[in-house]
Length: 81
Image (cartoon, rainbow, N blue to C red; front, side):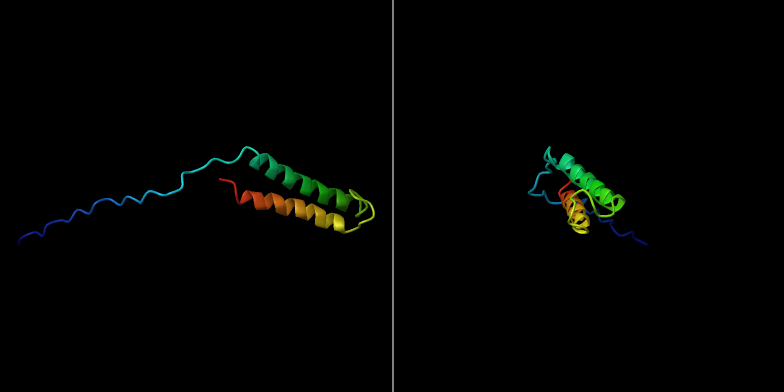
């Protein structure tokens, strides 16, 4: 019985992408970590002081400020390569 010819497909080569991989800006990681840690510290101080500090007189808004810092830090993590 005759054998069929085996077909050799060329190996797949992805098309060249238009974007070259770029490095992180030098400020990104320190700023991201600083915002995350400041937000965490702000929330911890708020809970320990029963909403009296870091800014006296605004009560639970201290928690909102701390979470805004943390959200800004997490938003910067989306730019991290």
